[in-house]
Length: 92
Length: 529
Image 1 (tube, each protein chain N blue to C red):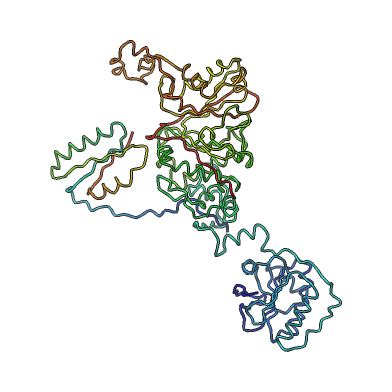
Image 2 (cartoon, rainbow over the protein chains, first blue to last red):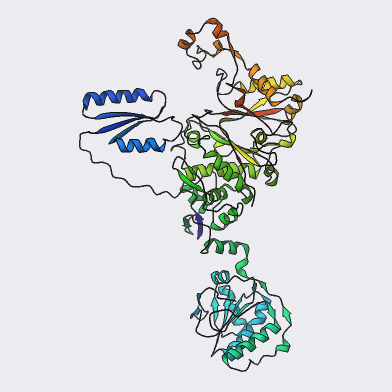
């Protein structure tokens, strides 16, 4: 039997439950722009639709400094503290 | 002499024997294919016959088959304990068999001798007799040779010793051990696990990883960086495991460690480099004395195949990015096409053939320091052919035209790095009439690539470039303004490599250079080991 050593970071993914679906949204929803060109157009439209259809839902907008680098930890923590939901506009 | 580690070993007869013992213990590590051990075996049997009721007289044999042969050959009845796994031999830490230990109290060692010196054994027999209150065993000492050298203990065979060291309690290895079933093919298993870049890997056994770790004095658990996208901890050990898989020698490890440090800076931004659909990849350039010490190629085929250091250092770095960082094609590596540089791209500058200060000296390091520089490049090496120019400005002009195609010849004023590798014959032409400085070459590149702004406007041939709407805002004079290829000369990096024959230089083309993309990073290589 040959033994080899694990070349990976040995990360064990955390299992998470999906939040129960109630059919309603309330609270604060964050819209995150990663700063890819035209990502704001998609998020603007989402904000407009939320305003029309779910007026009780508060929308807050966030943006990464640049799409090329990981989200800074303070911004990640801020979103987690402030929002019940987050939608991230990806690229291309 | 102190206490030796406890053990519990099973004899050839199937009985368990433990150390320490309540009886005086006289034990001898031996291997069957050692002539001196065969000289000692009948003596130990005679000790057993004489002292055996009052003392343990044990042989600890180093192979199962050998123990049986030793027993049959000499008609032994004393306990021959099985240490075929060699864990006890390793733990007792001696060099030569026969290795004799006399433990009068059954625990602490009073005397330890290796090989066979008649006077020593005779004196030990007397000590044994004294301890158990018997007359010395009747042995014809005069018939025995004065002295015989022993043999190296089996646990010191290089392969075995490294395996034992890797498994020992104080082993520096902490990575998860993966046992591969005998029915599985190790190479196939590693492909199946997703460890590979698509090419076969060297299995990272604990023994190989230990040998790799000998290439640095850094502690195996030192964390060099947290590597995106998974923010995996790039420890020295994890880097060494991937270096083994890539096919590296231990002396390459310091280069790989320095390269990983460079990649994981905010300036280099390995996350963006790997994630971009443009298909960027690190290009590693090595400067300084380590180039020669580890046999890097900077001459013929410097950017190609055939040199182990060039090929495997670049590959090891990419494997760390894949396995520790977690950047994989289709995951966060979103390259539209990618490039062969994603397998490996590492070479050395031929500083001795260059008339210029080498790249690391330009960047503030000392000439005698070894340095690795990481560039994020999307294309390359792209050949620039000029076999005709004989004047310095002519060859400089050709190098400029070669760079003019970067991304798209229409694009100018680009804030994007290029790395131009000038071959020796082109250098000779450049220097024909005296020194042709790097700055002069950079200026020449900018001058030759100047084009009127209007040639960069989107048109029916190509919709790329300045939009028609933006161009409409400019006056004819503004559109006639000439602009060079690069936004500044600082984007043009120059090094020398290649064989003495051939008028072929080459260029690497960058990605998004700057704070929003990637900036080249140099790191000193720690050569002290």
